[in-house]
Image 1 (cartoon, rainbow, N blue to C red):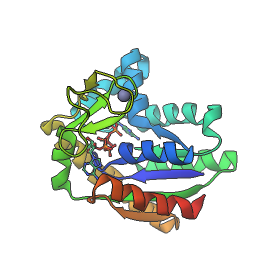
Image 2 (image 1 turned 135 degrees about the horizontal axis):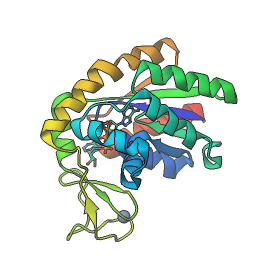
Image 3 (image 1 turned 60 degrees about the horizontal axis):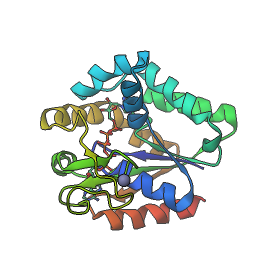
Image 4 (image 1 turned 120 degrees about the vertical axis):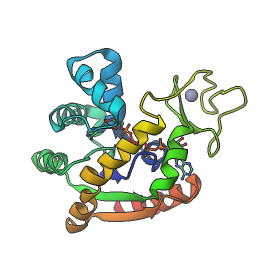
Length: 217
Ligand code: AP5
Ligand code: ZN
């Protein structure tokens, strides 16, 4: 199955994708994570992506599509993927359609996580991630154990993302509305759009996500 998670920065795509991965054995494929790994590894694509990401813009379609295609070819992706943060432009959506057509797959659902922009700054500025296992936390909404210890793996290093600053969040939201929001209509027309209320608490969003996923698996 191929599942797309659509939604602005901070909507909860990563949080929900990790839960769905555990529950249904689909592989979470986050272009943000793949790009951050490329930046950390200092690859040519990573070098080009870094400045754009720090400014809150969108990395070029060319780089992102290449990274995504490469990852989709891995054997573990054949049973099903959750695309978290891809596609983000119409060009990317069309490239994905082409890629899936060539491998005989199709999009089973594009789930739109619906939220208000006003909540996003609070969500993003309170976010941290376990350096050891990648679990996500929030200072208020999903705190780690006392002493900043990861509840899942006991890791003691929680990191904050370079682009999670108030100034950058505004640009990221702008990029979302200008370039990514039109994909809601794109997938509506394709007949695969589902919406969930992502203003609800994490567990309630998870319940809504599961009911969508169970209709397609
Ligand atoms: P990316 O890594 O994809 O970041 P993003 O889209 O900005 O999304 P986030 O990871 O910020 O948010 P999320 O929706 O995953 O929320 P989360 O679950 O963490 O992209 C980063 C950059 O890479 C982009 O700006 C761009 O430059 C580049 N890029 C990536 N993909 C690209 C592409 N396809 N094309 C071009 N460029 C690309 O939740 C946020 C916080 O809120 C957490 O602390 C969480 O614990 C908390 N939380 C989650 N749900 C709830 C809830 N229901 N209630 C309360 N708190 C909640
Ligand atoms: Zn951990």
